[in-house]
Length: 282
Image (cartoon, rainbow, N blue to C red; front, side, top):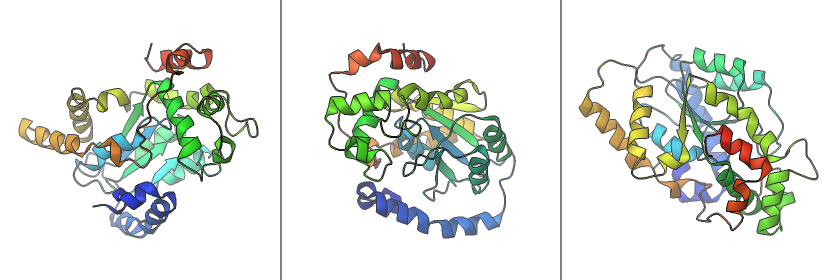
């Protein structure tokens, strides 16, 4: 079992971050072996991008189940949770340039042309998972109030009731509004990827559904495998491995908490309705 999949890693942010830091030594060693080869069927890095709380780790389970896809715990965030400081395109591109051949990397990346060009130069498979904005907001409110005490917003969410948490996730921080603005301003910078032909967009609801996930995973395998020898038997073998790897309970951010009584009201809220249109959820 991968160290980052252990129960301790799922329960402890500190342990998980420490383990990921330690894995940078073998990652650096693999980087010395060579750069990504254009057209390689097994060496293309996979960037699993998402709006926060959209199911990043679910999609990463699929990517990591593909052969020759090492995982070193790397995660590139536009606004790291500890500080929420906005990273520049130059900083993001520098981090992406350190990705090793075949590596699976999780990410929360805003759309920009410099980042897109860097991903193209890496010959990366760029997957983007999206989710109903109502569920993003509800998940974020619970996560910041109950699950990640190291997040920059955890102190402001601490001690709030469920409805208060939802309202803060919706309207943004009162103490640091520039770091945690209202909901649409946190989501809109990601939406450019949905119109980018180089990106494969995956719906959380599809990959989380037992009947629909096979078709989605098959499309991911075909996007990743760039050779001409992917016959039906090999394709179905790869798809089966990826489908079997999906387990929502293994995510360190997974919660059994379901949507609150506010869910239906949020669907038509002015700060959510337009986002649902943009993401195709109306």
